[in-house]
Image (tube, rainbow, N blue to C red; front, side, top):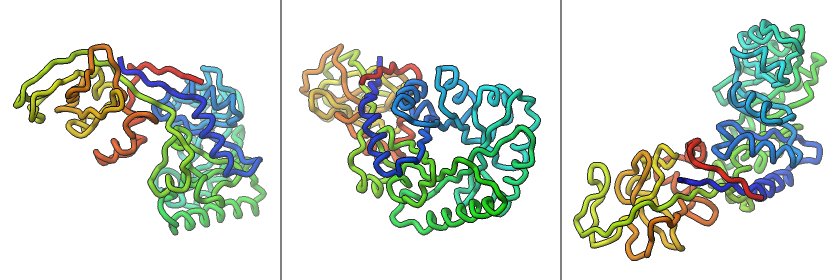
Length: 362
């Protein structure tokens, strides 16, 4: 079966690289949403917590509860407003996002047995969640007046930190600082303030405040080539491989896979790889992708199927039982594969399905 090997030593090294950009007292909230970008949320969070990471960010109630039930004791923030399971989440000491009055009202009516910890989300220019900065100040005052709800943090999300010298980012930070100044005048001093994603940690030190939220950089990738050139020390932590299950010689003119979109131009050898789009290898890489075998690049031949794909093995000597590398630090470059089909590393990583076995090495 397809197999993902996740290198926890490289994960720790990536964390140290990012820490070097931060003041000593700056806390880290590691983004482990989307099954830790496909790497396995509980396993990744457990290792990062052992490395001193203070908090984790997720997207859903289910992700938060899975982390808590796996033994994670650090703070867990759900990045999106939640309107179900609120009592259970609060009783499990999971922090909630307040993005508008409706999300605050839902938390107030939860019936939880303990005080809810919340972070106020301010929209400074992402346009996804939260109120504008002026209305966010009013919402913060509503939180402060609400019984059994504590304003633990204030945050925003920066939309264009992976661009060269983004004026938009400076504008977002100015608006966010307006909120913080206004709250200070009202006597509100939330303990946690955070805005910086992976790219901002590297490029915008004035966005660090007292907590940052690294995501893709922890897993060894960058959000853009612009940021990659500033920080070359990050290393991808996942390698994906799959076995060869069938090999046959074909004559020139033989069509391969659905639709016959690929045809052998010469006599060659076709090898079938036990990996397909149901495992997370995208169908878009049909006729475009490649795998690595014994330091040779073997091109994907024809359409990627749900559970299998074929490669032109030529005279490589490949045999049933051999394994090919699909991507990783010593295999095909995931960023280049993603770019060839007009997407990004995030999408391919998070597409790696649950039926791909994951092994963690340190």
